[in-house]
Image 1 (cartoon, rainbow, N blue to C red):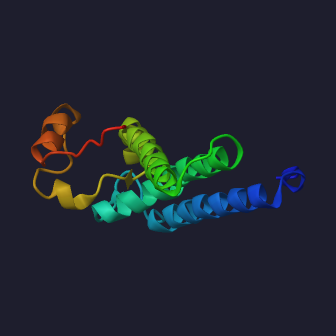
Image 2 (image 1 turned 180 degrees about the horizontal axis):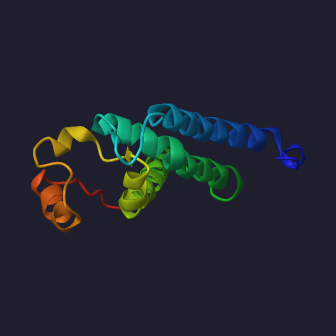
Length: 148
């Protein structure tokens, strides 16, 4: 952060906004999981919490880099910019969802579960790892946007 003053005011603003979102997400995470332990797993309550978490820790980064790219490298009309921002945020969130799945064993040992409780009510909890894929597929179709 010592060299941030060497950047343009616009870039400094974008960096600070992104960091504010990320730090806010990390602070919320610390509060949410204060009582979590291996014997007392705390899970997110609903999909909206997962979406908010994924935005705060990774979607905001996709948004940030889209902004920086548009400011410094690529010019686009308003409609294209809107599409790029949507995709940048979605890409960041998707990467975070992959991280969440990868980290399930470690997070569970710390009493943290980023998979919302609501979908899990349809099944026995906790799910054996071997049945997770089939269970998630049974919850319904996922929409996959095209990147045109």
